[in-house]
Length: 354
Image (cartoon, rainbow, N blue to C red):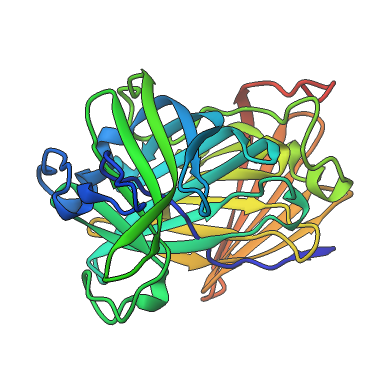
């Protein structure tokens, strides 16, 4: 049985005001191009981003200061848990990587009073895919994200400077994401920017963060270790309100898992196939007040595709058969256990792997 190491992830997302000075600094950050303030709870901050987008990438030469086009992409942004979890899937080209793809997950952490953004961007090397993290707050319509180690407490107070990422200029059909590095006199130099143009509005449903999709015929991770979870992909339902939805992500290099369990609530997770060190999964729990992020352990039997997920006092065992039946055994730390039999309700798998 292969053991997958489960840990947290990270994200590198942001955008900035327009108008770049000749010295590479950004006057727009001195007088920001602000978006309309969010209404209601902080979880509304990323509401403008929901939907589908065309993305144009631009890179700044750090020697000459000249900007040039550097690839393009398509991005699909959805939400779960009433908007408290925002999910991004990104596919395109960037620089030397003709096939760049990635996912990001973000939620507002009530205890930290800031957004936690989680990222997996395998780029040209999906074998070593993993997760990383950024954190930040919305101020004056801009979200500025930094490495977690720079924050000194709750909110936006920082202990220093480092590469940052800024979301800005959020309009109905466009927004910006910009990477910046520190420059002299407490200013910043922009070195990378994504320009988003809307191609589709978000779906009216907010409780399904993804549509179930099976792995593509040509996967970026073609090794058998990465294909062992394919049998779980689909939408499954059983008695007593227990349901499971699993979709292939990152061009076949991982899966999203959404589970609703009686007495346990909802969880949304991501398992990535890191063939060098294992896969990583993060778990979001939905309750009345907040979302909490936990790292779960996972063990996968490649021959039977039996998957065991465990975190804290909870453990789930998933096992499928050729007849389209999924058995899920739920065990609590108290020793209580329950078994659920679920049937695939749609999205029959393509036997060719397409």
